[in-house]
Length: 192
Image (cartoon, rainbow, N blue to C red; front, side, top):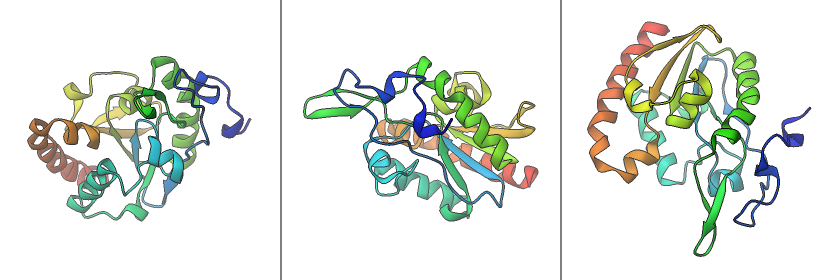
C-alpha cells in the first residue's frame, strides 16, 4: 500500500473542522549524512507546500536557526514528520492546526518506522512530544531533552528536543533550548 492510499485514521476523511487532508507530506532532504529530524505533524503551510517543516513559518525559521547553530544546512539533513497528514480543528476563520491524537500517531507509526529503516539514520533528532512518542515510544519530552537515548529497534540514537513552535509560544524555554543545542552539538561529535 502506498502512503497516499492510507486510511488508518480519520485524517483522510472529513474532520470536525470540515477539512480533510489535501495531501500526504513526505520526508525530504539528504539521507547521505544519516541525520534525521522528526517533527510532529504538518501544519497549514507544510500541507500546502508538501514540506515537513516549511522554512517560511516561524517554526521553520526557528528550525533554520537550530541548524545554523549546529553548522548544518537544511539540504544536508533529512526532515520528516511523525504524522504525515495535517490534523485540524474548527477555528474562527476556518480549519486551524491541532496536535495529533494518540490514534493518529499510532496509525502513522508504521510509516515512520519504514522511513527510518529505509534511510538508516545514525541519529534521529525528535522535535516535540509527538515525534518522541512515535519514534521512542515514550512521552514526556521535557524529561528527556538534551541527552542521547539508544533505540535498539532502529540501531541508532535519538536526541529529543523541544518543538520549535514551543519556544515561540513560551519564551521561558529559550535558555533550555540553547543548552540542549550545545548538548546536541556534543552528541553529533559522539555519534559521528
